[in-house]
Length: 327
Image 1 (tube, rainbow, N blue to C red):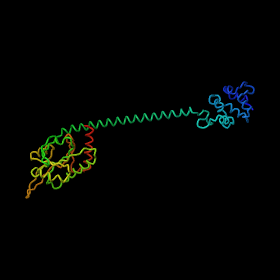
Image 2 (cartoon, one colour):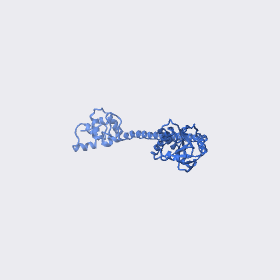
Image 3 (tube, rainbow, N blue to C red):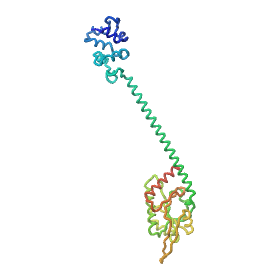
Image 4 (cartoon, helix red, strand yellow):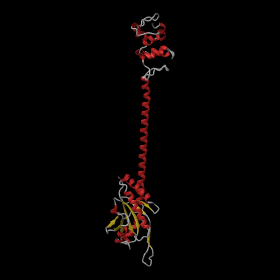
């Protein structure tokens, strides 16, 4: 059994000569490897078997000429199949029968490289997008902060809540505006003999305070009721009246001059109506709930149409804005 010179001439493989000990291109090869295998009885069959052995794994991997020769054989060639079966290099890291280009671990690495590059690009793109989003959010926050500061400066110029007042609370303690610095304040002007509107608004204030108290992250709100009827609403009358509402409700009253000064500071209109035969009368007045921040600055107001939920949410937003601006 032998490998013909025609097979060698066809392959044109210099490594074939090196590994097999081929000495003559015209005669039969003096193949040392094949001879040893033949003598030991380990080889039998057609020349394709010898070709398979000659194209050992080391030759096949290192010799481009050997690869070219084998891949040039027909797909159904026995020699081609025999070579691949012998070198046992089929499968995941093998050479494909359908392709003339070897598919090895090197190609696997080259395939993974684009994936790594793609992942890197995706990560860089995501980081870049996050950076842009963060910058946009920061600029937007700064813009909102600037607008809020401008609004506060404008409110300082408004003639509402700029003046001071000197009154007494329902316990007889003197009170001024400065006593409430550091506290959020909801303030309402009315009178204890009011048949319906004043009680309704004070109930609304009490409920708003209770809603805000449920959020432990928010500071407490101080509700204040200032009488515009100093003739009938003395300290005793105020103490009796405020007990029907929120426990923190503070009733303030004073002399007609003191009440007038307080009303003027908040631009509150009030007018005493004619007295009836029982010496009773109604006081017509502004129906507004005022919101003051811890600096004593008037921030917002709420009329009768505003619901408790709306007022509570509005105050919550004002509180959060104040924290962003001044803490």
